[in-house]
Image (tube, rainbow, N blue to C red; front, top):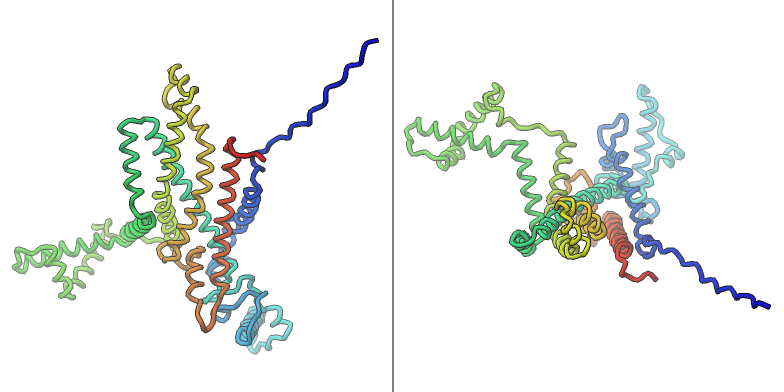
Length: 426
């Protein structure tokens, strides 16, 4: 009788490894970051918008009667309660007048109307009575947007620069990387500050034409002085004459305006910019200044990766087959560079956000009344004193900034584990 074969033990099914779920911290950071981006960036069209019948955007709206009110859920002292009561009465009275503007005598607001008009700011109000919650959302959208855009600029520049240096190699590689070394030796923040200040000066000159107008007046003053007998007159003496002779300065200024109006000097006519255009230019200069300096580390990372990939067998095979250089880069090198580029990009974004906030904190970044987490923190720092501390003005921008930076670093760590097969998968 044939013996029955014993079935082999069934091996347990292998669990599929999802690289995106290896890091719990990365998942938590991704969830927190998604919430912050939706809350800040997603609400920008609303916070930057102007309600119907108003002439100010929502983030600018406020009244001094409601200035420096603490959050609605925080305890209020007697002074703050009295201020809140007066502010509620004022708002209730405005509602009554708005409901019947043609009436001669309006009734006093009732307790129910006052209670309904009592503001309940979630984060409190600032020194101009503006809602801090709306300003934090707007500032967060601006800070995150600048950080992402500046990081994108630095990633593009660093990737192209590092890949070009490594792929060409030789003296070109040595020259390009020595330039990076020199830039590395300069103070990083100082470079960003200089670029931001230089950009502001260039935009100011493009709009006001102040330097060109001054040069024209000095040249005309030289001609006037020469006609008066000073044959050796120069622009230096003309500058001194303009400082002394106010009548000559006024006469030349009037003549300049006449020449511009007549269309003979169109290049000296100032360029009119709307407040929105000026704000957009300021933000654009800031992100270019940050992104134009943040690419140095990215260039080194990409260069090292390209040098490593060039020595791989698949690249040697591509060269042996006579594949053109541009196809080698696009089809073989670039796909293998995406992992390190994405990981480093997520680590560059918090760095760019922190730099923008630091510059805005110093007053050379995003300018008032446009909010940023940096200038909101600077305003809050001014309200810290031994007499009366408005803690909410400093607390909420700093907490939101710290939470965003922490979430981005967690996301970067999670992506690093996802793209690195050598890391632990336990």
